[in-house]
Length: 76
Ligand SMILES: [Ca+2]
Ligand SMILES: [Ca+2]
Image: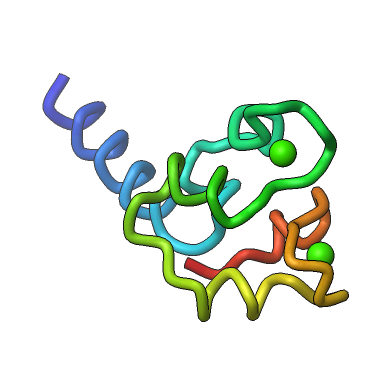
């Protein structure tokens, strides 16, 4: 039981680092109005401490929203 808990904790720590996807959020969950892109406002709901800088860095085509590919590339 203890061994299982430790393994789970290590896995969680690994999963929680890195991308938005790794934080357990799917694009569909973050895209609250289901319009196929994620705005900064939508991202702020999912990640309250998200910065405009991180959003802009992920917004590769500079259209001020994140498509699924850009969302996956989000580096948190
Ligand atoms: Ca949206
Ligand atoms: Ca974009």
